[in-house]
Image 1 (cartoon, rainbow, N blue to C red):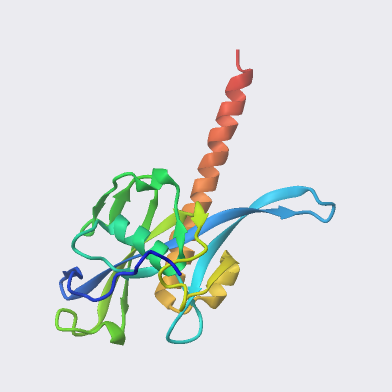
Image 2: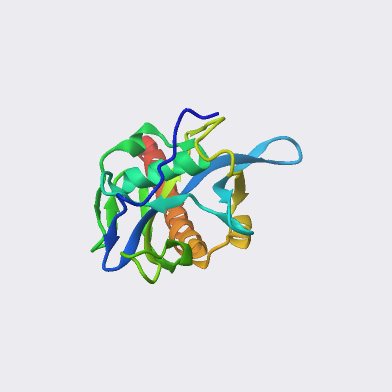
Length: 205
């Protein structure tokens, strides 16, 4: 049994223009693919998804952004509570975030804001159930053996094509395809350019 306790209730929930503000994340890690001869080849990125408690399909960790925390703190909390994962300590650096400009700067990457409707989240402050989710890419450092929602959540590591196929909500699929995948591809290209530049400098007079 986990000693951590998940937050419940909505008395500290943030709202903006009739929207419930949500923070979520796409946790990811790398694994080495192995050739038939046993030699390691390329690194494959996998994303972590959890089961839905209300139907088929898989989800990324997400939940309400509360008024005593920053949006990145809310995303990190949801990753811990729902999926039992922690990220590198560098990701805990303060970030500057603005919902108005939908931008975030820092070590953990902000993927964008995504609108969706949820009948289960309708209340006086959000009568139509409209939500605005700020999604982040989080590199996983540690998977905890127990976590607050362990009794109702199962973790699954999937390749991006597998995750796209099994994703329950269209807005989460959009965050994965248009947010995470594009950022990850651009990040890899930048890393290759930096390594090539460093390598060439070693041989320049």
